[in-house]
Image: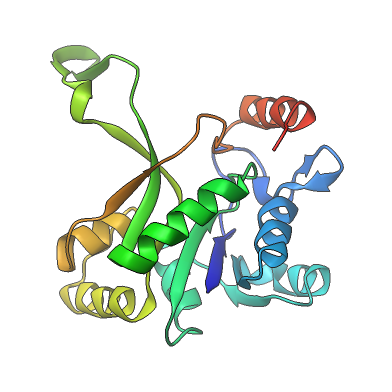
Length: 214
C-alpha cells in the first residue's frame, strides 16, 4: 500500500507555504509523512520544484516528486511511480490523522476498490448568487469530503488516462472515479480532520493536537 501526500501548494490564500509552517514542535508536513511511514505505507510526497531537495533530505525514506499548481496533476505525477496495489491520497494540510479511521478505510477499499473519509453536513446550506440566497439545499444528502481518499491503483490510473484523453480535470480523485468508473463508498470521517487553509486553522490545529488523545 502507498500513500501519496499532496504538498505542492503555493500558499496563495494562506500567505506562505502552509505545508512548511511550524505546528507545535514540527512542520505541518511532518505529521502526515511520519504517520504513514509508521503505518508501513510506501510514502510519496508531491512538492513544488524548488522544495524537492529540502524534502528529500528531511524524509530520506520517501519518494519525492514535483507537484503542480493543480492537485489533479500532482496526484497523477505520484501515481506514475506505482503499478499496483492500494493508494491513499492525503492532503498535507490535514495533519490530524487517526489510525483507526485509516484501518477502517483500508478495510473498505480492499473490498470495494474506492472509498473516502467524509462527514455528514450539519450546517444549513444556502445556494447564493450575486450575494443573494436563491434557495436552501437539503443537507440530508450532503457530505463534506475529507482525505485520505483511497483507490485501487490500476483502476485509478485507468480513470486518469481517460480524463487526460478527454482533457478533463477534477477537484478530487473521488470525482474522477465517479465520472469514469463507478460510485465511491463513504467511511464516516471525524470533525477534527480539519484542513489548514487560514492562519486561524493553524491555531485550531495546534489546540486540537495539544489536547489530542488517540
